[in-house]
Amino acid sequence: MSVSLPHVVPSSSIGGPVTIYEVGPRDGLQNEQSVVPTEVKAELVRRLVAAGLTTIETTSFVSPRWVPQLADAGELLESLGEAGRGARRPVLVPNERGLDRALEHGVGAVAIFGSATETFAQRNLGRSVAESVEMFAPVVKRARDEDLWVRAYVSMAFGDPWEGPVPIPQVADVCERLMALGADQLSLGDTIGTGTPGHVEALLAELDARGIGVERIGVHFHDTYGQALSNTMAALRAGVRVVDASTGGLGGCPYAKSATGNLATEDLVWALHGLGIETGVDLDALVVTSVWMAEQLGRPAPSRVVKALAGADS
Amino acid sequence: MSVSLPHVVPSSSIGGPVTIYEVGPRDGLQNEQSVVPTEVKAELVRRLVAAGLTTIETTSFVSPRWVPQLADAGELLESLGEAGRGARRPVLVPNERGLDRALEHGVGAVAIFGSATETFAQRNLGRSVAESVEMFAPVVKRARDEDLWVRAYVSMAFGDPWEGPVPIPQVADVCERLMALGADQLSLGDTIGTGTPGHVEALLAELDARGIGVERIGVHFHDTYGQALSNTMAALRAGVRVVDASTGGLGGCPYAKSATGNLATEDLVWALHGLGIETGVDLDALVVTSVWMAEQLGRPAPSRVVKALAGADS
Image 1: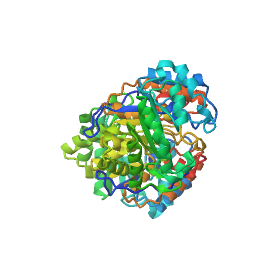
Image 2: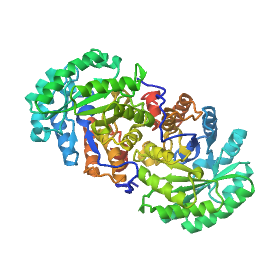
Image 3: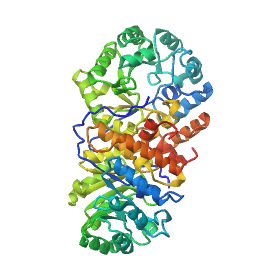
């Protein structure tokens, strides 16, 4: 009963091109409790490249004390060689020390990870929003001086588990401050997945009014409440052209099993291909990759497309 | 980390009101392998009413030989009493014999179940599309004579597992024929879940061009490929105001475990409430109902909202 391709019917209000920004190797794996071997991570990135994904965030140069899973960031990049370098292989750098390590390995792009809320800034970064922007300033400046491409994540851009709904002007303020540092692209993160389409439209409109147009914005939705693809479509209708997704739906909170991860790349690709938007992604190869990765992790991929195409056992 | 309410931010392009047409007791349960006791079904309907759902398809007067699960349709209605009657408690009737049985129990609304494709018509109804329309003609006529409200399902309205993508004119032809019989409302069924938003828009536009406006259309999406809510939003943007959903995401093919069911009512309610569209549904009560039903069935509810709000064990 599985069907491997949707009917292609373009929409009058959702067009392309769309760049899929694959976050599986970094955002997807960082919450895994058991450490994934470096060679498996490298194989994952190589398979994603082979499946046609052009932009892949490979790892994070976060302190190994905070995220032991990603302690092998340098080794991974060395293992990947050229496949792990260039402007389309960003790595996360939490601070200058992380940037130093990333530069030692010849990266071509970096991402910083800010917060729209004070509570999450304190919990995740150990400082206020203002202090974290100060911390990021020299990171972005040095990255630009080195001709790196720079992305700025804004987490908790819709809801926050401690503060509730996050006021749009507050989110836009943080976006402005991070872009003022010199970032090339923003990624608006619905970290806890509570957003809905009107919220997406309103935040994008506020940013546009402040001079941050959709051409500099990516969207990053989590599927905790089943809203990720619907929100993504709202962003595409508003003109956004970069969408974060995680192969197989990897990621999310390990305490809620496999249900609360990122938007699954396969589910996004299905939607885009159905809309006639070319992605260059070989969906079958991507599904095979997610099934393989699920075997490495010992539990099924949350992606609905993976379940449908690979069967109940994947 | 669970959050029980989304931030309310209306959209400029998705408005209300929206009627949720709850299909869990019928469409959700009909594929269950183990027979659910009549009293559990009655309790499910009562709980759905208590949670604020106004329109509930309660059962089907299909032959017990075809669907043993629903052999207790009459008993269920007797058990429900007034809560199971009226224009907002449709029951499925496959043919005149089913209508006879439904009328014996005093129903106020019925639904017929047609197919947009010849293969599914043969497999599900044992006759051609044209023959099935002939079979439905006296059912609808008699139902109208009895002042019943009548809904016509069109299954395989997007893709068909044997025939692939279903041409839009072919679907529209079947819709026209069923509406010409005198049905009050169409329900467009993406039975295998392959549709995407452009396809939704195009089918609705074709129906509108043929004089079947959105005010007479409901949409019925399955989440097999993760597209159900995104497609629902596309239909709402086009003006559709009736959305089918199944509490907890009940339903779908039992061979693929819990991943391929109907759009979950909770996930829809989350989206609608986030958009500021009132539904009258008490989301917490609905989640409790789905958790209770999942316990009856012995496996977790597929709804993401249920997982998020009730925890990983639900």
